[in-house]
Length: 236
Image 1 (cartoon, rainbow, N blue to C red):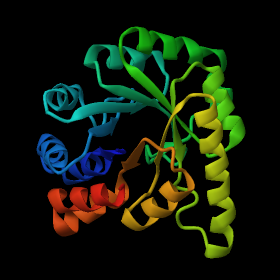
Image 2 (spheres, rainbow, N blue to C red):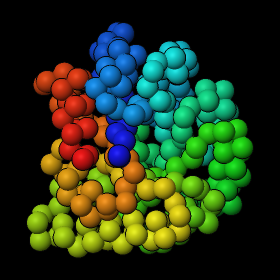
Image 3 (cartoon, rainbow, N blue to C red):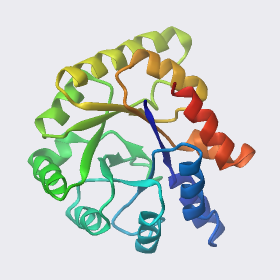
Image 4 (cartoon, helix red, strand yellow):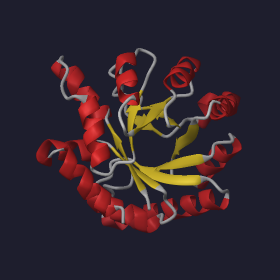
């Protein structure tokens, strides 16, 4: 059965805008877990905002598995080794200053990537890499000794119908190659119940689905429990 990862980053960003203690990330993590999420994910960066060290300590004590999304920077590797999450997702950040995750820039990290993967895995931390749904990106992740890839879907879910078919076929090809290379495969990026079904049909080898903005927006309307259960049901 596929598992669901829910990202707390939108809630953390809202908390920072409001300037208080709400939304409560620990409560959201626990509610998501009770409603069927296999793990929660938070992004960490070198300035410690909006996710703080205290947040990481608190979230590590909740029943949900904790995942960290981060660049392969040495200071963040140290954070991961201290926090001991269930898994790390290596990704880049959008250049618009929003902190939004985008596929990892393999050219920027070059030969430094493989040692980071080894360091984390030797510490017992699973490593996945966020990649574009393209064959070369999957090959680059495999060359860096990553055991898992998460195929980035944000750029295809809102495409016009005339363009979506080709994009989904590219996703399907990338997922098949990843499986052939014996990589664990997941999908993530702007997915909701409707788009999740299309994406999983194209990439049936997917072992997990990560949801962030769409899930958080639905949480505002129907609550964490219902939003999580509805998305969990869409995974089959």
